[in-house]
Picture (tube, rainbow, N blue to C red):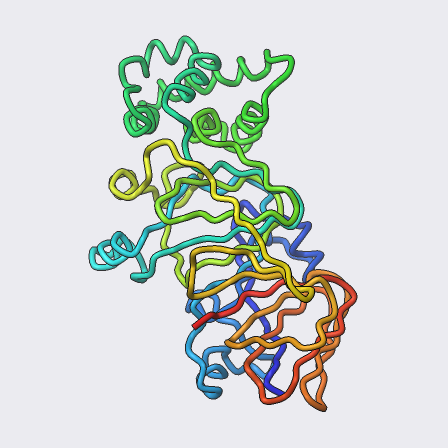
Amino acid sequence: MKSRRLICQVKNYPWGGHSYLESLLNVKSDEPYAELWMGTHDRGLSKLESGESLLDYLKENNEKALPFLFKVLSIEKPLSIQCHPDKEFALSGYKRGIFGDFSEKRELLLSLDEVRALIGFNDIDEAVENLRRIIPKSYEAYLKGKTESIESLVFALLFLDSDEKRVLLEEMALSLKSFSSPLDRDRNTLYVLQNNPDDIGSIFPQIMNNVLLRKGECYMMEPRIVHAYLSGNALELTDPSDNVIRIALTGKEKNLDEFRDMALLERSYPKKLASLSENGITTYISPIDEFSLGRADGSIGSFDPKRATIAIFLNGEAEIREGNESLSVDKGSVVLFLPSDENISIVADSAFYFARALR
């Protein structure tokens, strides 16, 4: 039987928490559980229950390292404002020691409940209108004349000195408290400010697209798109890379010079993906031809992985049958499927999700 249960690594980042992932994995931890990594990335290599590395097992079965990194995200505090490189910037950054690998990083995010996010920038006129509404005094004092483009506005904010940032954030906090019927962007701004009271990134919900991903919706973050996830639980499928440039809402290293060169600093929109359902399997349609993200609504009489596939069972129990052998799994189980001469069937009492290599 080629199908194997995997043991996967948890990442304990400050923006995680003690609810979704702890419940999924049936554990208790003093550290926040932020991400579950599933794949062959060297910073989070999955293993078989025997202790053998997933990478070695794939090689034994004439399969390559996975062309993706599959994650579960549990977001209880805002993530950093960030972007990822395309192929050109990844290779250039790798040669200069900025990135740990030379892979571009495209990102699919599938909401498991409701995910709040900032994705891409508003038009400059809309951004200015929002700022003049919420920080009229600071706008006149520090930003007026520096708003001919999104790029000039972003860097005018980022390069304010410490006293100017303090005054601006104090004015913004007072404005937010005075609004009797706050907009979604104001609620997000207040939420980010409460978690990052001294960070100028707290004003970015006023100049970015505020997006609510409803359960089951999938969005694609193309390289260079600036984004930040604020709250919720999700699946994330990316290229096998950890290349990222951060500018705010983080205690990690910031790189404004690389950000200026790489980020898409203009009006931009989030890209919601369509899906195709057939025979109980839903596939989210993206332009990526190396990997895909899918959902099975329950039992599948014949599951053909075609190439290496990782599935995660978020609810209930399932029995995987491969020829005359079987494997029982429960909530939180992660399973590797490989092409097999035997028919693979899955008897499941709830939906499960999978990432599939396409070549």
